[in-house]
Length: 428
Ligand code: GLY
Image 1 (spheres, protein in one colour):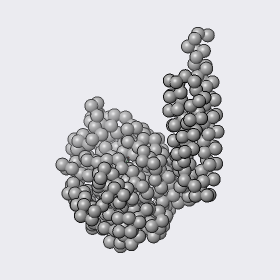
Image 2 (cartoon, helix red, strand yellow):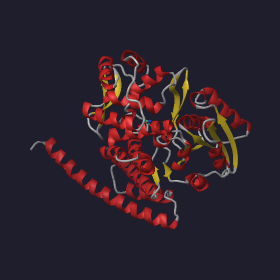
Image 3 (cartoon, rainbow, N blue to C red):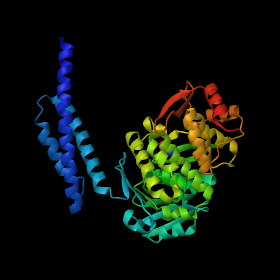
């Protein structure tokens, strides 16, 4: 056996030891999480972490190796902390999403709006951002629970999700003396969340942001993952920032005031998530009335999204699966001039990206949900509009496909292939 093979065998043995030690470490971290949760002790203990680093530094003699080992140990400690935060925060109705900024809880529960004071830190100046399409009572209920609320009602939809909408928020914050320790809370659909989140990301280089999504579209998708953005120069989300919320409150009771068409477009995002990652969830949506089990569906879809954003917060890898239906969808949206809602465009955008059997299954489901499966737009025009999308690369268009339920994958597609998929993908 040569030297290379011997060294590799040594690495294999060391990796096996490391794996076993890692499992032991995380199991101990879980026990600590339980202990701290029961006694209300904070997860982060800087003095203990400094001691652990100091005592372990002595175990490695070589100074270069010592530095590298401490880097590895710091990663293990960060993972323990994340595990403890998750176990400490998670309850039956609250999911924990780990993020660059420390993570946040997402509570999904009927009547949760009344718990905003307990779930969010609102005992300060709070910019409550809503829009004209949202029942005013929702923002008022949130404002009642704030120390010093200042409510701004933006224009609905794209008009509010603009530089002038964000500028209005900053002007109000300036006028009311908002500081770095104050916060912003969105109460509305995806446009409100995107604008309020972006305003929070920029104000004094970033203040706390809370989100109460009130549409199914925002509850199922946009509310978590930290994407914020504005439509500038006519391009959707051309200006934005990753700015994860401090906490999210999803109250399915708020959907009672939502018109059926807006419910259906939100369901399209849940279907999207199921198609790319969870065939059983797709079957669950197909079985019976999905709105009767909306809390369960939301929690399952959010758990899938959580796994993807935790693995890839900046949308550079696996998170891109969530763009399923969006390449063609954005093309349709650009051409429909506002006649079709975002979720309806996503529904149309998913069909051409599926293998035939899955497409037939999806067509039946989308029709039952009241979503479009027919489109009279010219495939060539849709491709041209999709080419303007920011996910275009030098070789073609980055797109997501699904040949079977639960198994989405990304690859690049040429404009010609996209056109021919649209030709066969839609009922025309
Ligand atoms: N809406 C897709 C994402 O958050 O990545």
